[in-house]
Length: 110
Length: 476
Image (cartoon, rainbow over the protein chains, first blue to last red):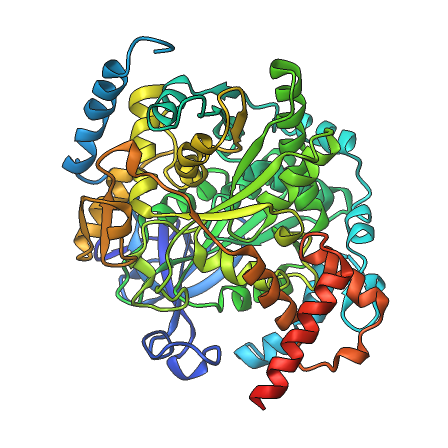
């Protein structure tokens, strides 16, 4: 992503995420609930950009397997967005409660 | 270029699947609705010893079987005198990709390599994706994994994002789709474009891969405790875990062991709903998969599923999301094992189930899975809160899937809610027979149906079918 801001675009060779619409809202499987049927079936896939491209533009990547995929450029060097989240007070209490229960229950087997 | 519309791709389904599996399922069909299940399983051409050798070479299996003394004590604290089985857990997180799914993947990918495929494709939002990717990496095969990850607002389920990251870590090309059953459509397209092997979860190879899990448990409990396990508790979704484990237990001489399926209760949430998708904190091992697959095991990506849980289940129970989070915390704080949470679904049921058994009994929880960012209880509960799900302490009965997660206030509140298996069996039979007149069924069909619902007497099954037919006649 040398020289380009990853949020605005990337250069050939950058690792990037594409967005594709596989099926439009009217093209989906039958008998879906309305909220699903009314949305397109979308996909995201990653690979090395084949050329310079700006976010939102049509772009092509080579995936890690060397397959060529075309879509709209979503992001360059997409980060992992899953985290451990915030502490959960309701769970923080549980360990101490259980330890106390085991202690109160006597030493046998503890 | 072939037509990529949904209808056109589905119309090519049979030829695509046949090319990608190389199994002639038609050869096993018998009678009006039956098929030769054991012959299909034997067609994998591997003995238990063969599978063990494949898995040893693939760094899979021989996982530790750990006693859980503190959780056993918790179970006994709330039990009548003399009750409270010893609880063991099979630490399947020790497999290469962090879950028992490595067992399934090892045999499927071995088969792909043996038959000369250059790559494998799997459609899965579960740990199976990383398992296939890991096994493919070891063998130098290409791997494509397709997942259902995002809702239409672009919110990704954190656990599935983590599974996607793991797939990429093992070198897979990952397709992250939005909500919908068309994951299967996208898988067909990938198979058609690449000519790769379908590493389905439901082939005879995949199920044979789990038999070693049941066998290891049976053999080790016999050796260490001088008795077969009294109960083995299995998280159940598509039925493969139950099927393979039970078959392995039988092979180890533990046919009398009670096999108990457990699912997280997510009743009320639709699995194909863009709105409900992110309102659940468990992405598998729940009733949204377990119940439809019990009623129709063949609703998979293969013509005949090798996972047939109703044949093997002695009981099935449900637990709530809050209970699984609670025992996940207990496992970390009291046993020093940070795992799951999804793989701890059966562990949540183990405490109440152990209370039903005598103190000298042995109850085995047959899996754990790795934890990590996205998967961890704090990740899931943070995400749930962001979506407006209420998280609080409370009795399990206060859980409302998609709205309230109640974390028990004491281990005494943990409960395993019984599923009426006879009702499921009757539902299975009704669906399997469909509109066919009963006199169109021959002995081969009735014997098949009796085996399908757990080896009940043919007369019992015939009686149920006749009663159902009379009721249907009365309704009409």
